[in-house]
Amino acid sequence: MKGTDTNLPVQQATAMRRNLFTCIMAAPLLSTAQAPTWADDVACIVYSHCVTCHREGGVGGHHLDLTTYEEAHDHRDDIALYTSYRLMPPWPPDESYRSLAHERVLTQDEIDIIAAWAEADGPQGNMANAPSLPVFSGAWEIAEPDASTRMADYDIPISSEDLYRCFVLPYQVAENHFIKRLEVVPGNREVVHHVLVFQDTTGQAQQLDAADPDPGYTNFGGIGVDNAPLVGIWAPGSPAMSTPDGMGIKLYQGADLVIQVHYPADDEPRLDSTRINLEFADGQGTREIGIVPALDHLYTITDGPLVIPPNEVRTFHAQFNVPFQTTITAIGPHAHLVCTSMKAYAVAPGNDTIPLVDIPAWDFHWQGMYQFRRPIYLPT
Image (cartoon, rainbow, N blue to C red; front, top):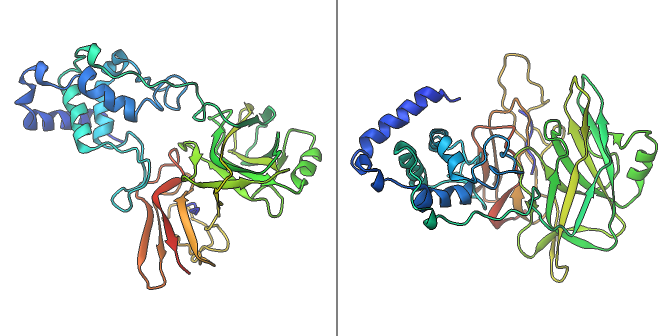
């Protein structure tokens, strides 16, 4: 399902945190030997929840690399601050509304351990007790994809308007496959707003591409091809998209992979070359699933049009009637910069409400396809 568009005072917050732990944890902090240490207590938390992004080649590596004690110690107060306010790890959905799979959420005990460690000046401890650093094979989440293809280098022109550019990737499906995992690797994260991945079995996308002298072709609202199924989505903050065990998105023999890339208006010329990595499921007994854009700007919005006048705040609602018995495995809210919150739920025939996802503080930079812990059955 797809939604529609709609600071912390650091010094003060740091002082508040120090006052809090001065009162509550005064006794344990009389001796630094009693305080949590990096080796025994904190490294395992950081390695489990942080270094997937905060490492060389990771999404957050250029901001902060937490693979070493020295780097973590230098930023101990920032780590304690952002974890105490639950700004890191970033997880926009409200876990009390619905608990989702693969949540990037620290327990209160883990937050307290980090805070007490920072309060005690971040003792290192006996490094012989420290856990081993996770091994990362590279910048790709799918380290050994079954298929990997990259669009041609594209010089994004200077433009005062957003550009929606489609590219036929140099990969044609040789036989039927089921996609188990799909990863979009933006070639230029500064300018790639989001990416939609389609499959085209008609050859129309190739014709549209051939008619444009530059790499790709421009088209808004899809790739300009009728009946081209959507097979993948990427927005800022998204990890590799995955399907539940035993399920997969069917990729048809002879299909072209086509991506639509949204480039915002920009006053500087830039270069992009986005890549798609695929991991296939075993075909035997795999249950086929698909991505359905259930909510849109035109047909499902009930109090549109989707227009927000200057200096106003508006709330919009959308409704999608499920045409047949359906099982949903994930949900992917999507919005741009002016959205402030978003909630989605289903209503069963008996008027029972089924919570799906609630994002009370929307952050454009952290979007994703959120997988349910168990698939949810929706009767008609």
